[in-house]
Length: 312
Image (cartoon, rainbow, N blue to C red; front, side):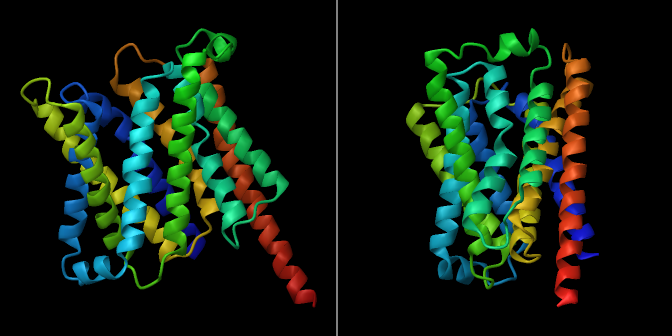
């Protein structure tokens, strides 16, 4: 029952994050990336902090300040700084393909760094299937796979490296959370890292001279409030799964394939001139199949492992 509940929570968190794509598109019409992201994460961190104000918040943050600081730097500041900068140096199709490697980067990092997170060859194959499916969905609207990936321009190499750096930073942050002390409440950790990371983003926005493009509209405020909810809720659930449930990071990562898929579906529903094609549907089926096979293999592996122990 524990594993079923954990998977449902992982799915819920991933679907929450999927809605962020639409909210970010609306928000960026009024504010530049670093300013908007800084306000978003600061608001989310303060909200999580408010709802946990009776849990000796500051004592926990001060006792574990190194973990909070490191997580905020990696998960919020570095990941999103690299992500935004990388998109300025590459085509959207290239960015979508590289970003689709996210769950694979997390799983591979956990495989080599964390005990109890080892994956077998079949599970790795399923992860690559998931990446392929996400790439097919990301290529929707482009003139075919060949045109989208052929001859990456030299100017895009910098963007690719930056985005991969951001993905690695996020993966390392999840490892740090998994290995952090049990005495650190995951919700307080989330609040602290969001606030610290947002300070870095707002500092970058100040250095760049960012400012609102005009008077914020109602749509901007609605998207901002929703993104705060998504950020605070999504990361709190993710940290809860890693710290309290002690779920394997490598196995939880596969659910993050749902993030780009959910974002694509929402864009098709709400955004004009954004429609699916056969390539997209094929990619969604491939990704869904990869998740199904991944967990079927995981359960089969666990059953055989238990039988081997019983035979002894």
